[in-house]
Image (cartoon, rainbow, N blue to C red):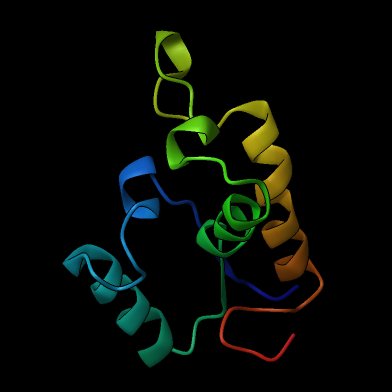
Length: 95
């Protein structure tokens, strides 16, 4: 079984280009330096936003116990990234 990392992006990070926040830049640099394969929720959520015109906030619950967590619909979208990882397709590799 191969190990890989799944990056789950928060609402705020979906509103800025990849690598603009120091935390994400640090994480991506570390994953690449250590040759750790990863998949990212950003890619599939950004693709869905482009396709549908949805805003980042629409992928997250805004209140209650699930506040700031993905909605059920967002989890279904993000599953595509998880499936890519399980099938050995990682970020930065040709699709």
